[in-house]
Each structure stands twice: as C-alpha cells, then as structure tokens.
Length: 221
Ligand SMILES: O=C[C@H](O)[C@H](O)[C@H](O)COP(=O)(O)O
Image (cartoon, rainbow, N blue to C red):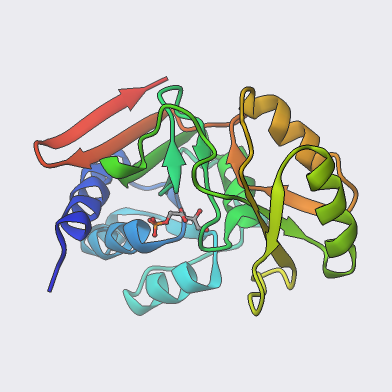
C-alpha cells in the first residue's frame, strides 16, 4: 500500500519533470524520492540526451528504464540536477546522505547549474541537525575523524556494516548544535580523512519542490 508520504514524494518528483531540459544531460540524485523521479523521467527518455547518476542504485534504476547513463567526466554542461534531502531549511540548505550517496551527490551538485530539491514537506526544518549529519570517511581514518568530530561538539556514530559506493565508511553525527551550517561544512571538510560531509550549505538547492497535503510548495533562493 502506498503511504501518504510516498504519494507526496511522488508528487514532488513529478513536479520536477518540468525542469528537465530537452536535449540536455540530466543529473540524477539518490533515494526513495528520486526513485519516483527516475520512474517519471522514463516517459521522456527520448527527449533527453542522457543522465549522470549519483549512485550505483540510481544507475541501475535508470538503466532498467532504458535511460542512458554517462560518465560525469564526459559532461561539459549540466543544466539541472534533481535530488532529495533528509532535511532542508528555509534558505534551501540541506542535510543529505541518509542513503550514503553524499559524495557523488555533492560532486554532481557542484557541476550543475541548477539544483532542484524534491521532498515531502516533513523534510522542511527551521534549523538543520535534527537528522544526523553523515560524513564519508576513508576507513583507516575512522577513529581519528570521530575524535576530531567530538572536539567540534558532535556525537559520531559509525554506520556499521555499510560501505559507500566509493568503498568508504560513514560516521553519522548526532547532537550537533548547528548555528552556522556553512562554517560547520568547512570545518568538517578540513579534517584529514574526511571525503565529504552531508551538509549542503555552501552549495544549497536553487529550487525546492515540497509536497504536502495541499499540493506543491515551490521555494527559491
Ligand atoms: O544519500 C542519500 C541522499 O542524500 C538522499 O537524497 C536523501 O537521503 C533523501 O532520501 P529520500 O528521498 O529517500 O528521503
């Protein structure tokens, strides 16, 4: 049975289709909301050039639909990237990486001209950090990075049994009091051994399509 939240994720995903540029490469994120987007994208697969994908899971789903997936290195121009979020604030800064795809997501987001965030409106928060901040870490640095994160005031928890598509581990940071998300994003990035962190504050979304019981709310930066 489809839950009300799933219906809202699907609505947000389908609303993003109008931002897909015909004849261009589309950037595709990861997660349950993006899965609905990929399914909707299948209906216009002959109108797009190809897709770049932020995870093995999204790549597999895109290919199942017959959508060509190409290497980001071969893409000079990426007008739009569509992805979900674990949290998004009113400035369209986000926490991402609940599914562990944060690094490839951040890379594609950096390349894309426009980031369209799709989510049900339960993801909208006044202040980021209620959802633990995922940090992708080179495995041998896990304990060192965890100690450095404690010094910054967070409580890191190793996501045991999980390996990212890049062969790394994830520390989920609980209880961070995030007053300045851009600064914290930089501080986390500067710890040796950190590959990426799930704060998307420096490069947030440009457009958010948030689905609630009364339909879609569009927010822009
Ligand atoms: O690593 C996963 C991604 O950052 C997702 O975009 C995020 O976790 C949201 O996923 P969902 O749409 O399943 O809530």
